[in-house]
Amino acid sequence: MPFPEILDAKPKVIFFTDFDGTITQQDTNDYITDEHGMGLKKRKVINDNILDGHDSFRDGFQKMIDSWKLSLTETIHILEQNITLDPYFKDFVVWARAHDVPIVVLSSGMVPVIAGLLKKLLGDDLMKDIEIIANETRLVPPGNSLDKRAAEGWNIKFHDDSSFGHDKSLAIRPYANAIAAMQDENSKPTLLYAGDGISDLSAARETDLLFAKEGRDLVTYCEREGIPFTTFKDWSSILEETKEIYEGKKSVRKIAEEGLVRHRTNSMNQPRPPPGTYHRKMSMSQQVAAEELRDAPE
Ligand SMILES: [Mg+2]
Image (tube, rainbow, N blue to C red; front, side):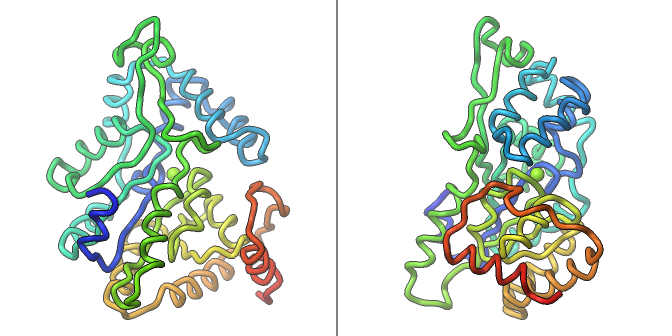
């Protein structure tokens, strides 16, 4: 169900989520690049360039896909054999169905790959509940076919013009704006997001609470920039905390506070990256919030 129909159904919670490394245990694009493309070593160089701000996610990802030696059909088939879902994601989808909580996948991957994998790993029935917003594929000469290898028969068709290829905030913002305009505070749905990496930076600011995967780049970024977040190891903790929010037992603020304490306790001795690492512009209020958080006693 797309926007605005999702809001018309008056859900209490809307759950947006990343796909690779968040719903799945491995990153599908990294897997294909490492095993059937340029290989791990060259990919790491591109990843570092993206993190340092020397390359955009879009351009880096394009280089990786251009190195793939597979047709799209083979790509999906190989991923089906090698990629696994988070062991508790299915439980979350079942709970979400029973409680009318919409799930929207926002991915920097490609729709046919994600749809193919979810169909295989989750099944046709549960998959129907999940909306997928991601990049598409396009046919390119000389091959003009999904059955030819990448760059020779097909390529990625980016979702928008942003440096991310898919700016995930674009899908969330209409919800946030519509909710902000609602008169009745009690009928406002809570927007949640789960993610793990660089491609989630664009979405990180848009929701009420962000679930960031333990030990990943996104955690460091959220903490530094004062974005309300909590960490997760797998979807069992996401389900538990989403239930608490849904049932009104805990506020998102409370969960974010607990998450921050837990994260700081776990990572007391780890150095933080220097300011500017992620090259994101902040509004004045966001800068103030980030500085307060950075200067707060730990
Ligand atoms: Mg990811």
